[in-house]
Image (cartoon, rainbow, N blue to C red):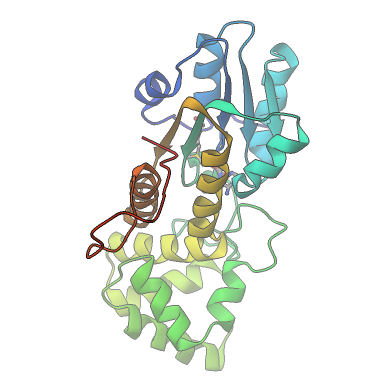
Length: 275
Ligand SMILES: C[S@@+](CC[C@H](N)C(=O)[O-])C[C@H]1O[C@@H](n2cnc3c(N)ncnc32)[C@H](O)[C@@H]1O
């Protein structure tokens, strides 16, 4: 059963205003979720327009199926957006007028049992796609000190990253860390009872489990390849690392020269693919 309020779409009007350049065009919603953005796009498109939507979440697929029953302009794939290029090829689409990424997770995914929230005690999981081989349980119980500290610091900016990694290893000598509650207790003991640390560390583990930054890099590759010449890519991001990946990539793709600064004459021949 899919709840009526699945996810409140963020920057709905602003993002769709930016995305749509041709109301007869073809668009990708790479992160369908509860379909808020897709619905808004479909509402504005003409009968000739269409939307390809992707999500790895089976509940997102249920919502998409409901829409597809009444609107044939939507086509949904339960696939990772890192395979966007392949999916477009399989469905016979060569290029798109706009591609939207609304990164992260939906509020529905926090509400249902995915071992993602520190607000409930449930088995540690955090996989958005249950076919992934490693869950949060594997990472927390198997990664070594350096890897854990690196993730907490780099993906979570947790100041106590090393102390926390050490405590996790110490705890593991006696017990497995099975649930979100077990993990929350360790975090609270090391970092204090602040919600900030809980949310930083949980987010860091989620990014690692779901390969979120690699997905974004690959997803952008596909999107840039598939964009029509006057098309647009719109990305809504919530994390500074995602933000940096997107901005650096767009800057690189828009640049006309990547020669070293000391070069007197440009020899790189770089052709900008975005502007
Ligand atoms: C913030 S929600 C999107 C909400 C959506 N725009 C709406 O209006 O309801 C992000 C969605 O992206 C999905 N997602 C995250 N990473 C993904 C990936 N690599 N490939 C496909 N879907 C992904 C999540 O499962 C989640 O449903």
